[in-house]
Image 1 (cartoon, rainbow, N blue to C red):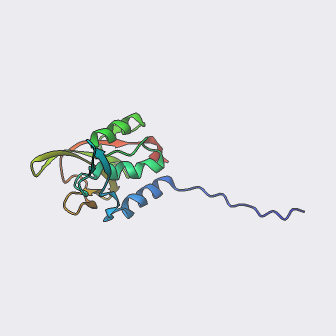
Image 2 (cartoon, rainbow, N blue to C red):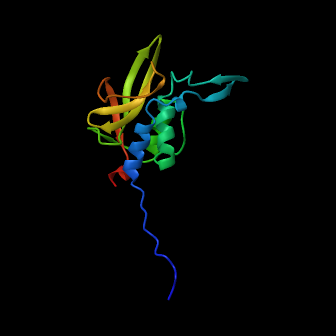
Image 3 (cartoon, one colour):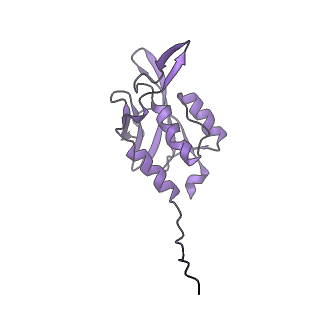
Length: 153
């Protein structure tokens, strides 16, 4: 008779863990800075969280293999999303990525990206707090909503 112990079958809950990571990131300063050399000068290209929405979104998606790389721009993130199998949908579903139409902040126009987290709410970087925050998903005009089939379970 063998003394081996039967191993439990453990299956991570993909969507549940993904949404938990998004919600647990709210208020964190983790996504505020990305230091690079620009023309031989060290710079924080996210301007201490002012431009952190794409970094936040791509940083969350990368470990789930829902995107190929981490990005500092919305355009780079959206390009990667589409190359990684994300498709356009008409209505948000839990876990969808929302791309809002460019908004003017100060003297600059910026596209904006975040997550649909259910119950009419989204999570995205807030330029005022410079951290991810929860807000109504349709608080700004929406350019498109993207969905990955792996989120269907």
